[in-house]
Image (cartoon, rainbow, N blue to C red; front, side, top):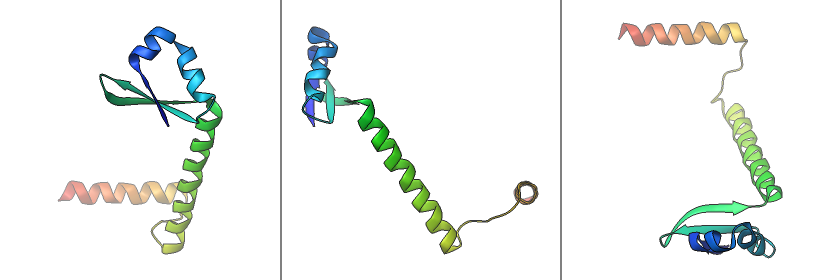
Length: 91
């Protein structure tokens, strides 16, 4: 990942970002010497988002297999939540 400074952006604008992204998938933008932001093109963002969603799906499936999830109707879910809230209020 290549680093840009806030001053690079001030002087060169979007061209600074485009030049870095032509050769790298991401660029870090530093402000006063500290990394503050990461920029990437939309294709890279969509790829990362898809990976994130796939990981969440795999975790949900693992929770189902391990018995850490409840499968029930919406009505049964609301009834269970009401019971939990009532138990909490009684304490």
